Amino acid sequence: MTDTHNLIAAFVDELVRCGVADACTSPGSRSAPLVLALARADGLRAYSHVDERCAGFFALGLAKASGRPVVIACTSGTAAANLAPAVIEASEARVPLIVLTADRPPELREVGAGQTIDQLKLYGSAVRWFFEVGNHDADETRIRWVRTLACRAVAEACAERPGPVHLNWPLREPLIPQGGVEPLGGRPGGEPWLVREPPPPVHGDLATVVSRSARGVIVAGRSDQPLTALPALAEACRYPLLADPLSGARSGAAAVAHYDVLLRDRSFADEQRPEVVIRVGDLPTSKPLRGWLSRLEDAQQIAIDPACAWQDPDGRLNLSLRADPGTLEPPPPAAQAWLEGWRAADATAAALLEQTLGGALSELAVARLLGAELPGDATLFVASSMPVRLIETAWPARAAPPRVLCNRGANGIDGTISSAFGVAAGSAGPAWGLIGDVAFAHDVGGLLAARRLRLALTIVLLDNGGGAIFDLLPIASASDVFEEHVATPTGLDFEALARAYAIDYTAIDSLSALRSVLSAAPVPAASRLLHVRTERAAGLALQRALSAAIAADARSTVSSGPGAELRA
Image (cartoon, rainbow, N blue to C red; front, side):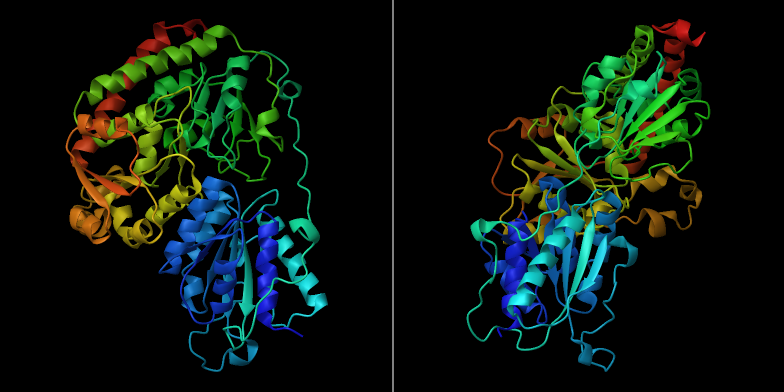
């Protein structure tokens, strides 16, 4: 017999054999066996975090950026509960995580032992698989079993619908090994004990479901993999491509970058009703686009849904295909005038956007500049709430756009800084973040990753004195409670915070100053904060002015521009 530490070492070794390369730890007593095994494992990078909430969101960002499952280990009690927001986001966004929670053994549960809560199925239906590991010594049979367990954990996390898995480890003392620890019993040559082959990609021939030339559009949202094949597909079938920047598909001659503003005009939206809608990935963030799709009761709406994500809140889908988006064959092409009409409206919208923004510093102008000038090898992690909407409104179409990531599974602002640092750890190129002041305050502890983990991240902070998105909602009229209880300005000194966390600070007071930072080379090896001060009221007024200008011109384009004969 050998002790539990050897069993855990074999489990961790098997995770590495299955392709796991990263883990996140946080301090604790009961989790010591798990942390020691992860930190000492060959072929595994263990990132140390002070608290579990930051660790969970860092792992989430790292898994999104790398495309590989990331392990999270924590101690017992509320430490495990602090991982819940990241686990929920991972579930909704289909991100593979392997959560290892240390626990008290059965004899210490429900008897008043410290730091003990009910951890069995703690995350409920948010995990793809839960398993209570037990507390065993390591004989030959159990070594085989625990290696198989590790293989299953990876397979379940990376299955057809990826997501988090949870293994609960009740551990008895001694929590520190008394002798040598060896990952016993692995297969020769570093091979995994058990391999589950993924299902083969399903080829999708859209001509079999759309057999005639029709007015169609392709709508692309966030996807488990960048939807880089869609621009060519859209060009082949002459369908306008309405692609959220999170899709990685806002590119090519068929891309319509400014659909969010164009579809705010009801006249334009009603005139441009398609006969076919092909939806790929999650639904985009844009509320006008979602509302437009929900009103298309006569259109044939087809979802390309290999992960069985079931993105259909309005019940408008006619067909869901489990095809690989990269294998889609185009339907018969639409009339050229159909695409030209959309492109003409988009070009006019782009010109009006530039005219409305002018050269002044604004949140929309910052989003526009990042979209135009971030290098193609960069990754931008953008906060939910207002920043992701700014990106969708202002981001131009580009031949080789940078990657854009966001926590849009559950759409919360939690853990934005930590997730952005996780993206920095998992990205080959420069990492950037775009965040508002409220989301920044929500996860200020995530800044510790810059110094402790020596990561380089450029954070662009839009500081407008509160949650600007709430200004767009009816509750903004409740003037007696709105500012204090809803907008919640933080009043933080962000320069002092940057100094406290050893992060370089620059106040950005003009677009030219931000452009200078973007064009500077090489990218710094340390993290930095670019502080952009704006006014919420001015930002709201600019959005409304832009919508009004584009809506007026869109009506003119519909009545007299290319493709008008299709809408007569």
